[in-house]
Image (cartoon, rainbow, N blue to C red; front, top):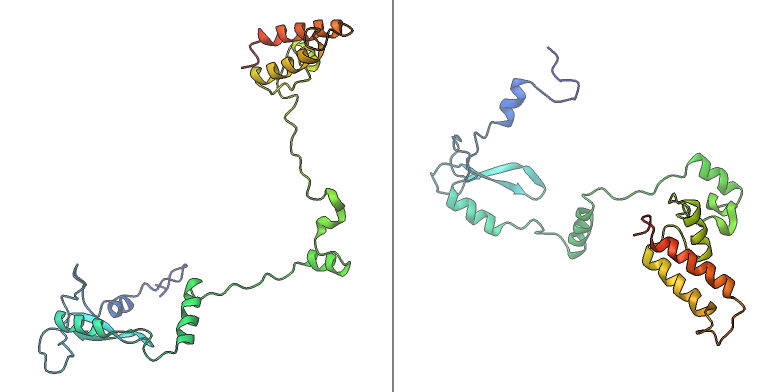
Length: 208
């Protein structure tokens, strides 16, 4: 049997025993099956609680009883012996999990454009490069010919609500009706068309 599976996990029994050499860990954090003696001077209690030896050796431990591990932890200072600059540098590395950001290398295409003096390929398109009006929302609603003609007369859009079309209708009435434009009757024919158009939309089920 191979020592490692295809995913590079070490499945050997000996490796598992090494991982468990400290014993089974209880809910309190104690390794209850540990046979060690507390390493505090003069203490003979079982050493069931581990603590790192130093900030530089975090995977090697000292073993204490419950009281002495608390005492040890109270005195523990990860940044002991480091300068303020070193501490700030460490905190800065921790912000990115000690994996600093690296700049992306230019692709072959980007290098080709740069040889032509173009930093961004969109520059070739000039001022229209960043213009993206998107899909037009006009002409999206299927309307009968009469309602389509009514929308055109009212200078409205077919995606408008009935209330929006009504606003356009009222604006046209203010311009065309003799009572509202100083008695000018020269546009009565156009006024009749606007009134007809609004009647079509007002009764339509296509506009909410």
